[in-house]
Length: 255
Ligand code: NI
Image 1: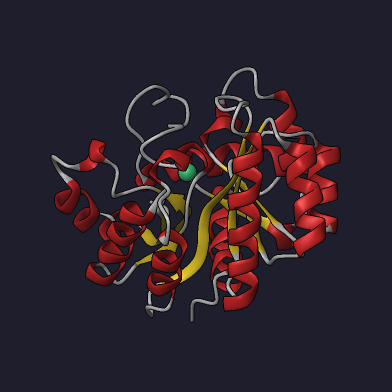
Image 2: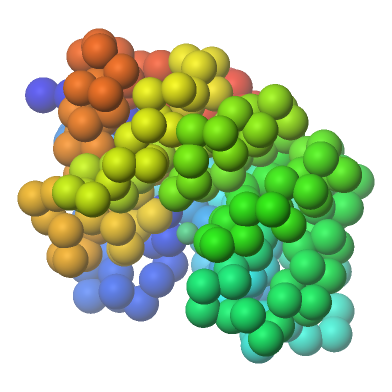
């Protein structure tokens, strides 16, 4: 059995967990899960992520507005995020970023909110958790401009893009997508990322690794992703888990 599973990106406030959230989260530690970063996607979800982190010792929270949740934004919402970020279990600003796959029309608004949250993270001296979907160029330019500490999560780009992100000082998070049959590019990127910048994640309830693809995902499935990363990088899955747990603790300043 695997141990030291640190899931650097999940959404346990999601309604898909409403029916069994507490039973599920209570089972994690006996299944080897030692840490989870629960990411908010708007003000309400950030508060819920924080509440979970205050209930479970192994959960830590990130607070922020996801680019696909622009419609939830209201005047003063960033003040609310700032207020939440000051609580002890908040370790990052996230999930923030750009998504041009589903939302091309709102590009300008997405960029504005992303920039405001990058500035907030700098002001609070917190790392960021970045979502980048089909927006590699703009994401990279803003990373270069704001120079945050943090992670580009659920990485889907090429090894070349990964190298640029690493050069800018960021970590890269890999999830279930590396186990998919057609995942050539993310696997090349996963091979090229140096040990010191590698993170592992679920994005639960989404992105279940093979053989659970399409089903609800949770942190207990991380070993399937770790086994694939181990195969790509030529080590054991437990070594991947130990490495990524140490990296997550370092990035998010968890003692
Ligand atoms: Ni996410």
